[in-house]
Image (cartoon, rainbow, N blue to C red; front, side, top):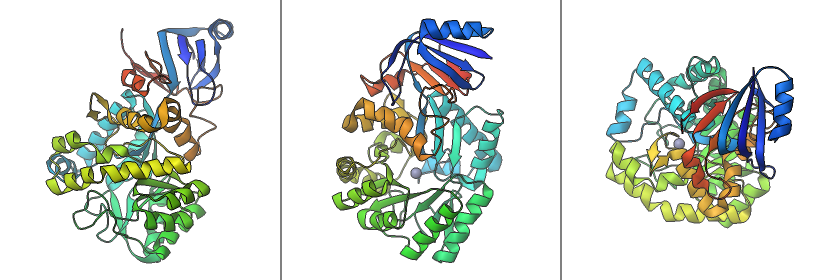
Length: 403
Ligand SMILES: [Zn+2]
């Protein structure tokens, strides 16, 4: 099927915007992008075309959220309700989250710990078209030492010693993991730990990284303290989640090694979300208290030239401060890096990390037609993404608001 999107400006993190553009989509991929008159003529000559007037909208690639959990359960009442779900309820709950996420204009997610391998069933259902949702790249269960960060629920697997961690990596890959997530330090949500608690020994970290790399999987680590991050980066870690307590030296090492950072700035500034879920006082204090150092750490990464990628940690679709968590986090990033780099951090950068640059990340001939549209210019102001009103994934329109 041929589709033509017209009366729009195409913006991506690669080239100058194309004003008065046409985007010609054939089946699930983009056939051509360019000046409307020329593209429309070519598309119409090729056969029947479904044409859409986007009313002057700005079209970008779909957003990519690199730190998501559809089965998130933080300490507290809201989280316990998710934790107590049986497998059928959990799968449906996660499918609902996936649909809402796509509606927000998030066409790709990276899941970094999901319960009970329900993520693999969801990924299959989305791929087969049985459930609407973003393209999912998932780690399965996160690997954690006994009693380590996140051990309380079914989205982690406890391992100990290099042999245990090798087994952990292999068991997630066996189940279908696209990448490996490992918790190498404490965090905000663990009652018996501090953010700065180191949780893996070097031989355990290298067992994870070497085994995953041997199988062609990247590794991302939940990590706070600089020393722990530095050691893991030296061992070949591909990505750091949160990075609460970086130093300039460790940030420089990350930049030199090409290790990306998903700062998840939201997690230390989301009291409203915590209150909504009934998150206990001790965790709120720790989270919100870690905020200033978290920002300082993020600034160090920026100064060092570390690749920054969008990730919310909060469920990507969650209503928060007048928008959804994904867009709110993108705004947080943009406050420091500006709208142009924010667009990169939310589209092309993550796609490159995922190894999908041939297929996604830009609005370009040959790529999958994962396109979103909004009325304001996202290169002027990242808050333009609050107004996403059109979502297409692989040529299929899943949202088209009437104006
Ligand atoms: Zn997380």
